[in-house]
Image 1 (tube, rainbow, N blue to C red):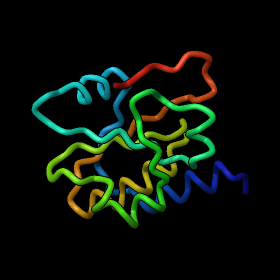
Image 2 (cartoon, rainbow, N blue to C red):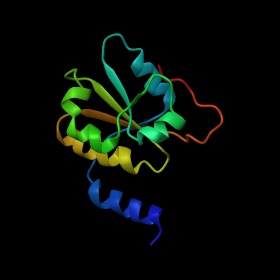
Image 3 (spheres, helix red, strand yellow):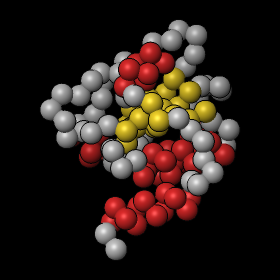
Image 4 (spheres, rainbow, N blue to C red):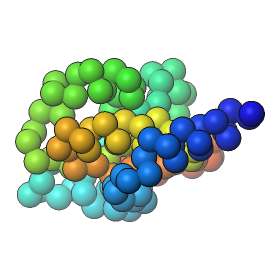
Length: 122
């Protein structure tokens, strides 16, 4: 079974009942500039992927590591958390699944990092 098929099957099993929005860069930008609310823009890809290409204004916070240290990374109670990943979104949705169960408000932003021009978020 191809890797993408396995990933999609994993997501369907894990997150069948999950409810978190998928947003676009414009929405992430609007949230990041909202003075009344803290928004974390966390790129859950590997540090190597982040170094190669990322959206300006985001933080590298690899998915598995984020789950282990969420209390240090997401320090403001009631903050919005935007998890940024590639178009397949397996890492972001997996992390979102677990963080949402811990009470965090999660949104997912999927980005084609191979695109020539990436937008700044913040």
